[in-house]
Length: 85
Image (cartoon, rainbow, N blue to C red; front, side):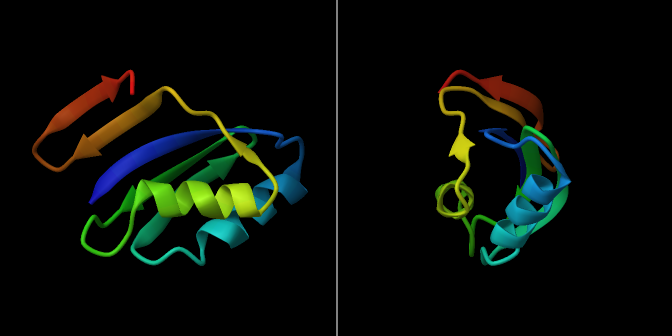
């Protein structure tokens, strides 16, 4: 599993948090760790899920994924790293 924090624009209230949680819950291979205003932290099983699918679900729910910087990527035994993708 890989843990990733996705930054999200357009979230302003608890309804937005619930909408993003609901959207992410439909993505196979994804475990929702936390959703707050402005971000979602998820664990992705690379065998069955993908970051692209999580981002598409957020987009389909009407929110904008902030591209360009992925935060808090960690795999068991790999330590933490950041990437300027």
